[in-house]
Image (cartoon, rainbow, N blue to C red; front, side, top):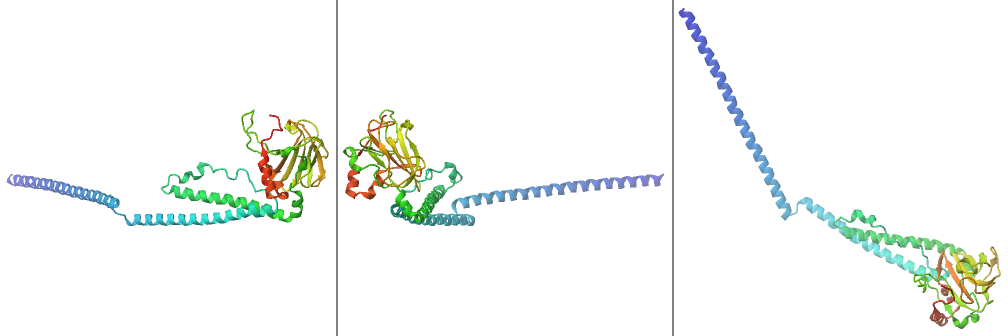
Length: 340
């Protein structure tokens, strides 16, 4: 009995010791785990605080001082601005050179060939605002947009001169034919002109009855009914109407001189040519009348270049002195030969 009691006590003590050991291990593990988490939390907190402080310091430094990256950006921006300024100077220089060529073209080359200044409708129409919209929000928008506008203007001028030079090249091959084709004389004898009265060419004439602009696209030469009308240059008859009102022109003749030139002779009494006829400068093609929208006998005479009416007076200058031309220009006045 004593041995059994002793064995039971020993086992009880051993079980209690083991239980105490296990509890001690659990407590130790819990203490170590809490300490580890606390250290980890403190470390993370320090890292976050450090990051925040570094970020604040970086923002403050960047506000008061330039970083190397900002220095590089500013340097690149300055270089870009300098390049744009250099480009603008080169564009201005090129524009000046092209303007000199254009001046010689208008006042030297074209005078040699007796042709009008080149005009291409619509070539100077402004570009839509959307063309430069992609640059409008940029800090350097005025510089960039201004430069591109200079380039666009130069491109338009170059285009005009390219077309003009092509035309002059063609004219140079046919100079002799051009010399006889360009309208160059008076369409009636100047002695037949009544009181030197010439109704002026006026593309912006204000209509006295309709109260709006109605272009007068030729000149009116007052003379007696039946006065001979002459072809002002070699041409082919494109129109010869000896009947009807014809939009106010009455009886009329339209000559095609080639090289972009046409001439119109209106309000005629007699038409002496037919469509398809070839006529020479100075040949009688009709007689002055009072047909169509006319208040008295006169010749309505137009010069049309590339589809655009031009002032016929400029073509009379070739066989007049400077004094005669200036006196003629002084006598020009609003036409009173046509009904309103």
